[in-house]
Length: 320
Image 1 (cartoon, one colour):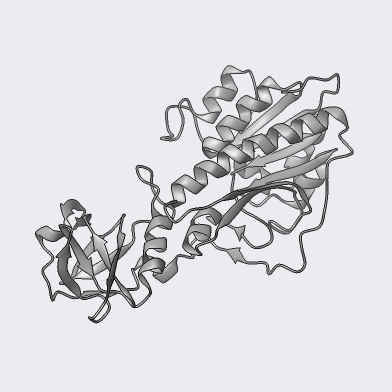
Image 2 (tube, one colour; image 1 turned 90 degrees about the horizontal axis):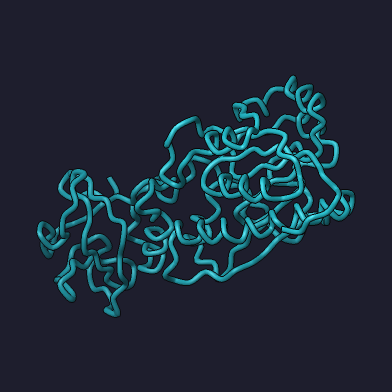
């Protein structure tokens, strides 16, 4: 981290692993941490990092506040009293009210795990995998009254492969995002009024993904291509952590089967989508719109099992 004589008061809104790492980066910079707003309370309450963000901030002697306060216009007075220069939001999901945005004397910035405007809203890494994108991006943008519409300050792109999952893309977003945060803090040290600011492209369609928006409502659509089904299952895969989309499911004889991993075979289908075929390489096969897709382990009634131990050729898997 570059050092300079320019010291600004930065108020951090932080959640998840990215927020914890951002706090460490900020604490090692030449800027002052004016406070931390977070949902992660005291104690070892996160599977993504220990200790929690609030514990880390307390150990640093930094004020810890409830992240919900950014929704209250009265919180702007606290920021004025504490002479906050910069507001930095890292993976916290509360909508920040206009008064709080304007209270940051230099500017307010948000780290977004996706390219803008194409991937506005939530769960961008999962949507990028599901949409079979070849690349993804992380963006730091200026915060405005409307979510994810502010001018772009920094952006970096990276490739996505057909093996990536929602988790692997999310981890890459954190890694690349932290580099952008360091760049922001360094540039603030040099000249706080010269942070890049370019409008989002008007030639790219803005898509806003919502919290409860999940392909097929979480149910596997066997009438789709094998590639699309595999992409959905990879996009939902955050193992060993909880997926924001839950586990992709299908119905077998009235029972719920959750599937977290599939493999696309080279064999073309000759059965109706959702029909269980003969085993291929020891794995259960299911017909899709084009090729057989293979299932090894899955969950039946919440318990892990080998698909071949209960699925038999001719069985039908359905959406309801």
